[in-house]
Structure formats: structure tokens, C-alpha cells
Image: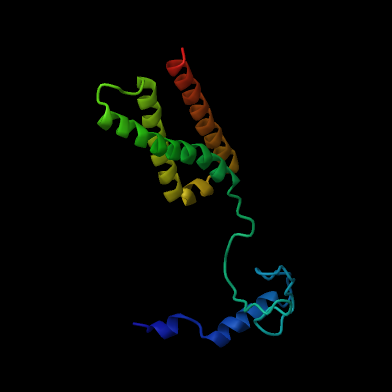
Amino acid sequence: MADKQDSQPDTHDRVTELLEFVSDRDAWCPLCGYNVRALTEARCPECGQELVLTVGVRDLSIIWLIVTLVPTMFSGIAAALLSVPMIVTLIMTPAMSAPWGFYVLVSFGWASGIFGILLVRRRYAFLRQPHKKQKAQALVTWSIHILAFFAFLIAVFP
């Protein structure tokens, strides 16, 4: 059984790997963007940031995730805010209640907010999908929310 120390390269090996990697290729400091090609030490000569060799995504695009989350989070927050006066009204004046359309709207908002929370939790699965599929999901989400809003308006203000 190999001990933990054998499984991880020591600091000297990591620095050597970094310097070898940037010796003949362009790479940029993640802090200031300076080209660190042909470094002689594991520190950016421009800003002084200590550098390490890692694997990562260069230009992660989260725009469709954000576009999909906006209506879900807005609906969830609106539902939470609308729930308070509705509950207070039901407790204070049980004979008076909001029109049924408000209950449908608030229920939709809660469901939408829960969907948004689940999407945040599964964001990596969403981001692994092709951009075309992400865009389609954003379009469907917005369409459902716009249709729900108009249905609410028609139900409450006939």
C-alpha cells in the first residue's frame, strides 16, 4: 500500500512540471492575464501571483444557465412575497380570501422556484449539454412563464 506522500508529487516536481509546460507554449496568468511563456519560477513576473499547473475550462459559458434561472428565481421570490399577505389575510379575515387565480399563481411560483433550486443543484449536468440544448431549455422555461403570466392575467382580470 503506497503512502499518501508517494501518491502526490512534491513541490519541486510540481514547479518543474509547470516550468516545463510553459517553456514552449503560451499560457496566461489567471489573475492579471500576463503571458507566462518561458517562466523561470512559479510566480507571475507581472503581478507576483504564485502559479500552479491545473486542468480547467478556459472559457466556461454559463449564459444559458443564467437565462434559464432568471424566470424561475423571479417566480419563486414573487411567490414567497405574495404568500405572506395571503396567509395573513386568511388568518385575520377568514371570510375574505384572494381570488383563486392568486392561489394558482403562487403555486406556480413555488413550483418554479423549486425547479430553479434543483437546476442550480444540477448545474454541471446542464452545462455539459450542448449550447443548442441549453438554449432550447431556456426558451421553453421563458415560454412557460410568459404563458402562465398571461393565463393569470386572464383569470384575475377577465
